[in-house]
Length: 98
Image 1 (cartoon, rainbow, N blue to C red):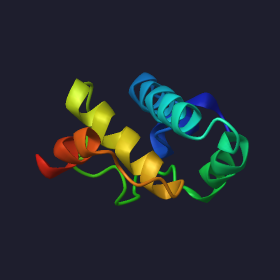
Image 2 (spheres, rainbow, N blue to C red):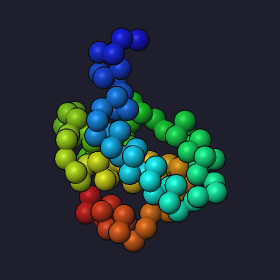
Image 3 (cartoon, one colour):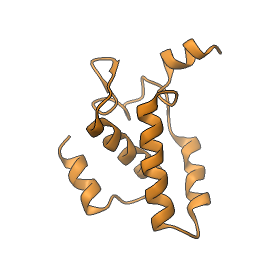
Image 4 (cartoon, rainbow, N blue to C red):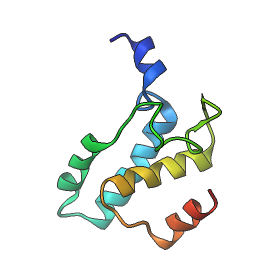
């Protein structure tokens, strides 16, 4: 698959998703210093396609990738939840604004 095709079909090649991964990874490692490697195995279970409902209203609005801080934080929340992490009170507040 070409890089063009990857960008057309998946979110994991975009900077804003990579930022969300960094945020989620930081939270996971900080809160689970002994088990973070096992938790990160759940990343394989995430649907990274642009058509996944995970990203609608977060990174993708009106079928367009968005570059805004709120979307990055909301995407980080999805990643955390898909990895089995309960959102902190602060992260839940971000989610509640959606």
